[in-house]
Length: 93
Image (cartoon, rainbow, N blue to C red):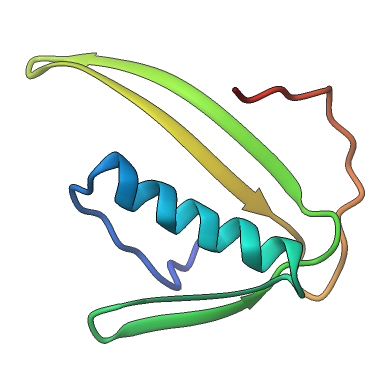
């Protein structure tokens, strides 16, 4: 499988700024499923189907520079199709 990065943005943000980005994603998903991502000269528009696969992952990575913790949220779907995969109950709080 070949992976093509359509958009990428990474940088230090306050928790409040991150919450605003996540609220904008939530609003897009609650609405018509349309997400527009842009930073600098890059941008991409995505139409998220009604039932994408949703992955939440918490990781601890230890290396020579210390220990990094992360939480990743990922939406995935077949281009031009719907994903109907079922997962277990998820609670975030």
